[in-house]
Length: 84
Image (cartoon, rainbow, N blue to C red):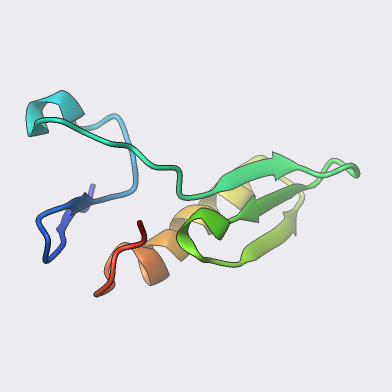
């Protein structure tokens, strides 16, 4: 897991259960995206919560999840202005 400390002291990372967040102090978790099926049974990624694009459609949910993480790592995880 990659943890990024922003200039204002916030931590930014893609959530995983590899770290017990309670050990880091008080936490606020914010959704970065939604991965949902469409009416045709394909999967779409909506990265709107972090001012990102919509990705897809993907045939498999696992493909959508991989695309979601790849986008977040490349465009959201490390950037100068955090999304509030």
